[in-house]
Image 1 (tube, helix red, strand yellow):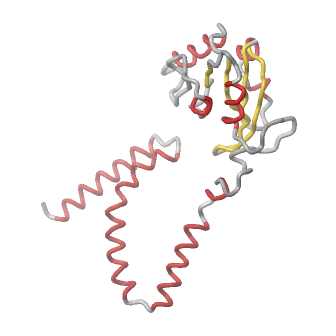
Image 2: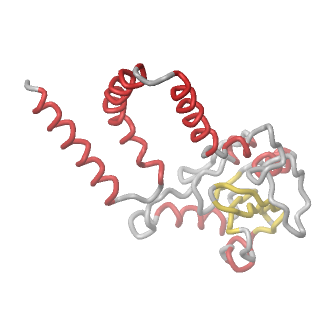
Image 3: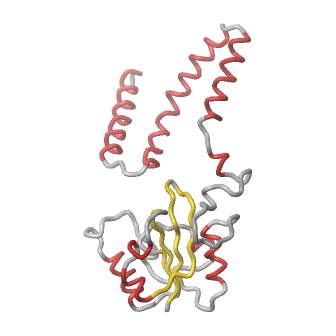
Length: 218
């Protein structure tokens, strides 16, 4: 097959994927599959650039290398959220009224509380899995142990099941999160407030600033 046809098919498939992803784009990571298509063009660009670089004086090559390194490091803020800075906002955000271990995440703090209980049943309510099952070592007791990115009218069984478990007090602990400045008494569902009491809260950053709440059965 001639090269022109191969390039045409390659570009057509790639553009089709881009259009498909953009039409349904909700979260940034759905773009990751497109990165695989960038490998071959990147190899070609490196091949072309390598011949050009060989013709450049050494000082310019060193300058370009340092410039590229600075651009990569300067735009990467992950180090601020690493073990080098243990008390960073992904671990704890200072908030009045919170009594918590500032060197532990909400997952670790809540796990210590849950593991002290004889009944360690847990429900991750109205959110994607936030890591509390993993941190506490507690296995879910229900099929819908978290809320997926599916509209309620498309699959009402998810939220209906969670609400039934809470109303019937089938789990001892319920964990959820709200925007950091929202009053939990206004943001938490009535069935939770009626059947459970808040025993802990912890604020930290995960793409946005949130306060995590741990409720225990009354």
